[in-house]
Amino acid sequence: MPTFILVVDLELFPRNAGVVATMVDVSIRIRRAIHLKDLTLLQRIIKNNPESLQNPDFADNGNTSLHLAAQLGLLDIAEFLIDAGHEDDGISKNANWDTPLLLAVETSEAVATLLATRFPRCVPWKNKQGADSLMLTSRTPHTALLTHLLTLSPSPTSPLASTDTSGNTPLHYASAYGQLKSIRTLLEHGADAAARNAWSWTPVSYSASVQAEVYFKGLVNAAEREREGMATVTGARSRGGSGPKMVRMVSAEEGEEFERMRRSGESGRVRAGSGG
Image 1 (tube, helix red, strand yellow):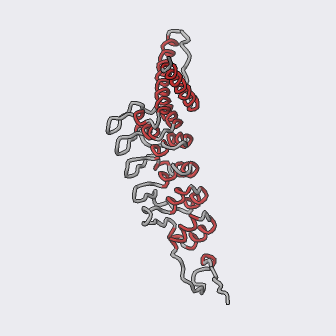
Image 2: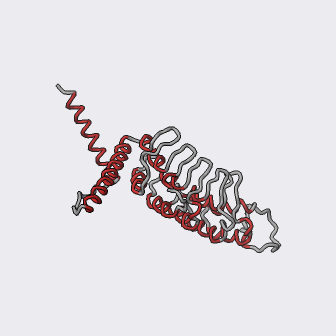
Image 3: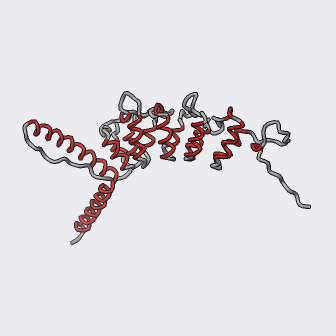
């Protein structure tokens, strides 16, 4: 005779409805619903168990429900958790002092933008390594988010000068991870290319490749020429002259093409020099 297993969703029944079963712990069901990306199920569980909204998982670095949604890049679930009051009593932090924003910046630009916009005060907050959201975003290609964070930061000092426990600035992060567009964005907003970390290394010293180093130096030189040009124009206008034209910064694509041409030229010189 075949055996049948009846699976009952206990969230469909009100409490004390007479259903006799061994319930899976609510904390496990909340995390399972988030992993399954099942917003409807999660809403039902939280409605019946509002005290378990944050649901920190101490087996997973103390990550809360919102940390998990941020890690997985689940925008609709993150919005629901926030609206349900997840952060009403304060910004969540895990055992590494990471806020949900610090986890989201590397997984989902949409979720990170939501968190930064709803809770701008946590933009400059740092984890145990001293890294803030701007630093962690700098090592990603999310330049729109990077610009958004720069406009939101409530810090009285420039967020571009913020450093981690090793003295690294956001520009150090962008350079070390080879994020050419992030390097460009940071420099355009005034990042200091000469800033040194605890070991006296500048950002360009951490260039992930020769290509990145060439592009980085090209941006810095262009920025310096532009500043000199602006100073010249200002002086010329004060004397009634028109002044020279501005020098624009090259794009990431132009930097990559320049590097290909440079390498091709070096290869040609090597072949020519080895003949005879």
